[in-house]
Image 1: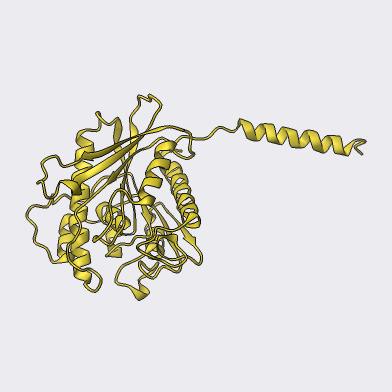
Image 2: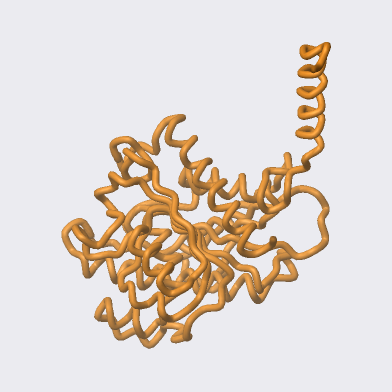
Length: 306
């Protein structure tokens, strides 16, 4: 029997504390860089017409450490139903900053928005997504072409977005131009008409996919986050003509696609308690956004770097 139990407990706690302090944060998983650089209003389509120039701008977030090895790139796309929004959205800025602090290069992009009223016209939503995906593919081509200039690894490009941005990421990774055009009733000869893109992963924050069978087209890892009370982009197909994060998770599991799903119980679109498109949410919402970001970072680390 120990003669000095209090002394033993004290020494044990000190040793645990010392061990915890020696655990180093892990690049691409944890926030390890304090300082980042942000280059604003660059263009991924320098030949765009003056009237569309703003639609092809991006902000580039990079760790400030003088690192020389190429870094993975995350392309972040804002929400807004293909009608509203910019790269300046609060969530996009938050995730771009925190993922750059983990060691990624992040490009927050604009894209062309639909000028028509999409609220009661599902086909216009499909068309909006189609043209937005074409802009995303233009951005991907640009970053692959200039990967040396931006010090990025062209084989590790991750597509990420919230709401409409999540739709873009999923459609770009899992559908072809022909499939998207047919879905939207578009005959667009200016499209890239590529097959399935080769990207490293998808971060889907409360987005969806138009056709669940498109998941048969590729094996891109998917991490999804959503609120189970979301009535803007419902988690399942039961009450909506899109397939949400729960549908995607179940289908991906059935197909053997690496994926994970995090559900925030009791929360709606954008992880707000009660969704308001004109209010980005308070500290509680931003805390949940940070949790979503960490969940996605853990998944990407385990899928791509571990």
